[in-house]
Image (cartoon, rainbow, N blue to C red):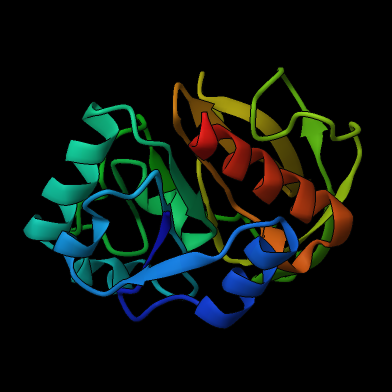
Length: 201
C-alpha cells in the first residue's frame, strides 16, 4: 500500500491516475494515522508554500517515523519543496527538513523571463539515481512553478529557467521531483514506476 497524503494542496486525481499507469493504486491518507502500514508515502502539492502549514506536528511525526523506519518518501512539486528546510515564499514556515537548503523564487531576469515557469523543459541528469533509472538525459517533463529548490548534494537532475535549479532530488529512500510526473508522458510514468518498485523492495 502506497499512501497519498491529502492535505488539501494537491491534484490528487491526476497523481492517482499517473500511479495507476505505473501499476499502483494509491490509498488516500487524510489523517496521520492512515500512514500506518504504508510501504511508501507520496506528498503532492501545487500552489503556495503556505499550504504546507496543514502538514502540522502529527503529520510530521508520522512521516518522519516512516523515514526513520526506511519507508520511501516521494514529494511532487510543492511536495518536493516541503522536503527542504523551508522557502522564501513563506519565510516563517518550516519544511520537513529531511534535505538541506531553502527554496527560492526563480529569477525573472528583470522581467525578461516569464514567472511562473510553465511548460516542458529538459532534464539534465547529474548523477545516477533510483527515481531516474532508465531515463535518457535530456528527457522532457512538464513544469508549473515559481519557486525551486537549490542545487545540493541531493540533486540528481537539474533544469534551467534563468538559473539552474534542482528538478529531481534523492537521498537514500527520500526523493522528489519539481515537475509533474503525472503530466509528463512516458518519462513521468517511468519515474513513478521506479518509485513503486522501490516501495515493493
